Length: 306
Ligand SMILES: NC(=O)c1ccc[n+]([C@@H]2O[C@H](COP(=O)([O-])OP(=O)(O)OC[C@H]3O[C@@H](n4cnc5c(N)ncnc54)[C@H](O)[C@@H]3O)[C@@H](O)[C@H]2O)c1
Image (cartoon, rainbow, N blue to C red; front, top):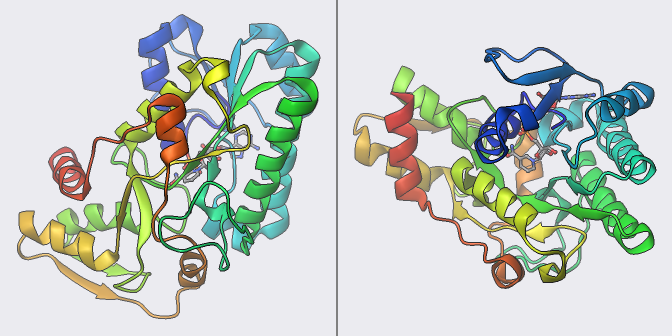
């Protein structure tokens, strides 16, 4: 797993170690993990350093690669060319080395950021107009096209999900537009109030980490012939607005107060994204079904963060 110290990698690695055994999961990142555990194999790697990546693959001969290293939407707008470089060349390095070294299976996540202002906003379907206008979304859409291309042209078994905003409590999110839906829980418990950078009625698709991890593993376990999408699968979860999540939190923490900051640059990114996602193709192909709704997620977040 490359980019394993981030929000998703930290939890996906735990699940993969449980499934395959610690000796069979190699995590890697630019920097050491914050709390390394005995028996876990970790390597420092920069995914942009192709010779070092090749040496790493030759050392461990992985059968599957999970590529999670990326620059996310909000940070990407601050450093557009760095985001393009990491998100595109990181992916190309992995795809090319997978072909060269015969790595069997690749997982690479895309995002709901591949949609844009002319995509249908409600229940955005698998196939529709896609005109992303953030550098992150542009890089993810290009990445999806490359994944499908490498599958069709070279037979590479690459699998992908368009993750919505992922909500979790173990590791802080890495600079995305949906980060408010994680920060709000930390602040609700710490100070009893939260100043939100998105407007009260900005609905966005989100997903609880447990469902994201289970969905990723289900996709990777699915038989090749079940999969009809080789760009990236729509993955719906829970769609809600800042006002709705604040109301849910208030049911458990009655004194919680929410306020809103205007003119944050992340609002424009959110406004160009879907409000909800239609994911019947994932349901039909590999039985995708999330288990957490807004209420269950809010309860679980607060219980764990406490
Ligand atoms: N978290 C979400 O809500 C979300 C939503 C949609 C898609 N995604 C996608 O899922 C993937 C993982 O996201 P995340 O939230 O865990 O991200 P994150 O920012 O929390 O973690 C990314 C990790 O990659 C590492 N990294 C950065 N540059 C690297 C490099 N050059 N070489 C090796 N490692 C490097 C970072 O140190 C970090 O630990 C990304 O592709 C992201 O676009 C995430």
